[in-house]
Length: 326
Ligand SMILES: [Fe+2]
Ligand SMILES: [Fe+2]
Image (cartoon, rainbow, N blue to C red):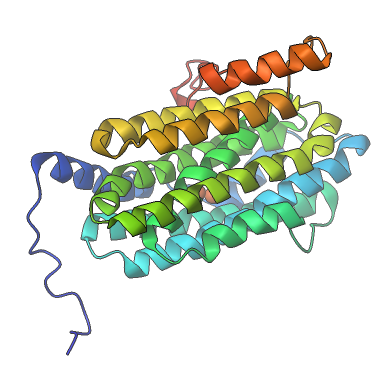
């Protein structure tokens, strides 16, 4: 009979590299505890400092829609993190997921409270493409899929939108609030990159194929979802290509760290498919000044297919930037 608790959880042999990754996961929990912020207090203080949220009337509805999707995404992240906290066996990864669930609970209620104060309302559902993306993470049937869907795809997408919203500076309360979010989200991405190499190592060939197919499905939904948000982003003064370039750059940072930790898992298939997504992004969001003729567009798409989409220098945690740390 299976014991009711994993009494053998401490009886695991680990390589030095794996031991290092698990110790990083453990520190995600302790850092989370050191950096924890009181959502009610921070929102009250920021509102007092800036004399309340200040959204222009024309920004009200687009902001409500973009932040509404984020708000429901925070609930999905809360649910996924709570599930991981329940199912992951090693204490270090369980601690990191538990800390994430605590952060996501705060992200969810603070975004709800901000929307109520700034716009007087919040969307009662997420738009269809965002819902498909959230469903992929919520309904994933293995911890590895949950991790790549939530921690590596959805959380880097959220970090990208937070970054672009901060740059657009549509409301001083929101811009300052998002720094708190980004700092937390960067730790959550860390759980994904540190844990995934171990989960990948344990996979059979069919499991790996299913995992790769799943990660492409999530990546496609994130492109569709970004396309769907395009008009609202433009209304908020955000250039969709900037979001695509930032997203690609952050994703690249995350995946480069992952492949460094698990070089033997870097499949040619994954790289080729990544190039395919770059080409799709190039077709959807060409540079603003680029010629619109069919031939030059085709040339750019082929270029992206060979050499990748445009990238920029970026960070996951904005407090790593000298400007934001002031
Ligand atoms: Fe979050
Ligand atoms: Fe998160």
